[in-house]
Image (cartoon, rainbow, N blue to C red; front, side, top):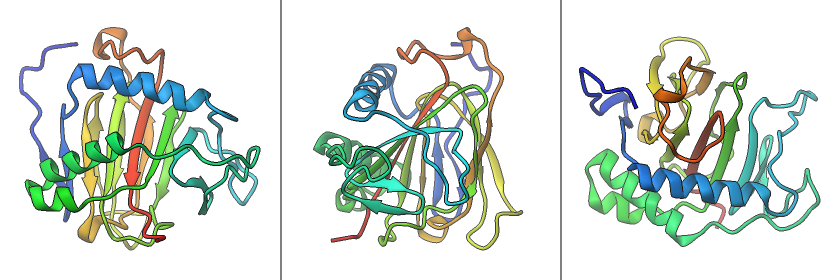
Length: 221
C-alpha cells in the first residue's frame, strides 16, 4: 500500500453522515472478503438485479436477512429460484453496532443499532451506481457502508434531488461511511471506480474490483 504524506482523517460528509478512513484493519478485511465469497456462491448465487424498466444493474448483489428486488424486499429470492434468503448473522450486526458507535462517537447509539439487512455489492472495473435513495426500508436508523478492494468515487447528495449540492469523497479498502439523521434519505451513488494499480490495493484476497457491504434496519417488524 502506498504510504500517504498526509494521513486521511475522518470527516462529515453531511448532517448525520460521517466518513471514517481505514476503519477496518486488514485482517478483518480479509475475513469479510472470504465470507462475502461464501455468501456469493451459496444457493442461486450473486446476481445483477433487473430494474423495472428492463435494464440490468452493472453491480452484482447478494442479500442477507431480506432479499432486495427493485424496489421492495422479501424473505425469498423472488427474482432467482424463490429460495429463502441467507440469514443475517449476529456477528455482522455486532460489526454494524461498532461502526455506528465509532462514527457518531456515541456508544449508546451503537448499542441500540439492530441491522437485519445487508446488501453486498460487487463492482467490476466498469460498474457504477447511479444516484438513488435507500428508501425501501421503514426504519430511520442509519445505513452502514463498508468498502473492500479497489478505490471508488462516492457521491453523497441531499434528500431532495439527484442533483447538487453533493459531496464527493474517495473511498478505499477498509473505509467506513455511516449516514443517518438528516442524511438518511440523501441521494448517493458511485459514479466509478478510480484508477489504481495492484500496489494501491491491500492484499485482502479479493481478486478484482470492489466489494461494498451496506447494513440497514428494515423496520418491518
